[in-house]
Image (cartoon, one colour):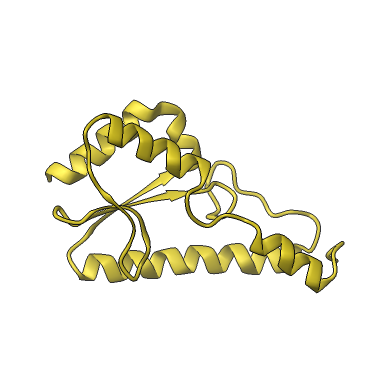
Length: 131
């Protein structure tokens, strides 16, 4: 059972950022500092960080919202709602990946917790851009 009524829950959910999140900004800042240039929230798939010329899409996935295999959990409050919501998020990401790959894009997903080792993340992106 949700402890909020539907109007309150809707207001809370609407206030949550879906772009320009802290992890996304940290990665963009580091890429920019290193001289990489990119597009943000690009195309109909709203790619977080797009290297359009190289056709490389980078998504920065929040551990909670995208069900990270290490940090994922379902809140105890209103469990059926959250299970459905988180599953839908994962399914939507898979469909985006499939559409992008069909268009010749390379797709990278960076988990929020991976940004603790920024050098490793940058190497992963650099490798994909060059291949």
